[in-house]
Image (cartoon, rainbow, N blue to C red; front, side, top):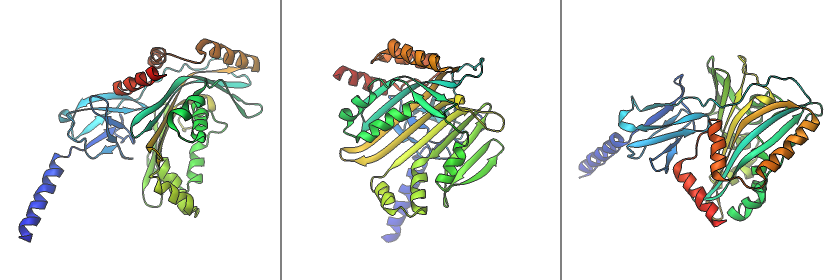
Length: 354
């Protein structure tokens, strides 16, 4: 009887294994792309790829859509894939080179999108244009108008006000005073770095790989499981209470950024291209998810008066509200990936409630 039962269980497990369809999403050089969203045809998420670009099972979906902020989305029929591989092309973001150099301010204009979900239900969406600058002389960041993002965020989600402030902060774009951000991340989180290829590095805790840096042509794409990095740092530094709190809430944080760079991988503040932050945690109302995407769409060198005029110009042009059609047209004109149809529909539903 026991032998018959074991044989039956083994047969079931084998059948399940055979039915599971594993895929791997890679770039043009064959490197796995971490944290790609794999969606059904109607926009429901099946799962995300792991740090090597692998999703173990598409759960019976015949067609899937692979989307990532740094690559062009691609819809494929699963049965047509060669060894389960999907190859995504880089997004060619439409940012013109700066011709006139330099003036006291580096100007970077960004397009941002911020979302908040509770139990996969969209509760908040904000998008717009955000002007910000770096005062080189005084080494100081300056920002333009946020267009009342914080006021909408808290009542819509019930999430702590500090998260609303975080939305405001990150929408400005990653305009930096220094170019050694990767070294800072390595040191802050006690990570080790390994050279996997001339154009590729990986970041590791003591037990696993949690991040990659890929130099692709004139760009650097950096991706890290920042939640694991933070919790590993908590463990190394003995911050047990913070570690336990994050573990209790099943905290997850994924981060991707792209910069234009030279052959050595160096970049300047004006070379910002895009980034994406995705947080998840268990809260009082269920599972919370906060996503912030920011894309560089314009850059320039300015003096102080030109910077002041630019802030006023943008505030007057866009005022306090931008229609979804206008936002989507701006995204399209700069090759920013479009919203998934199901997400756009959810946003339209939110707008009707206002």
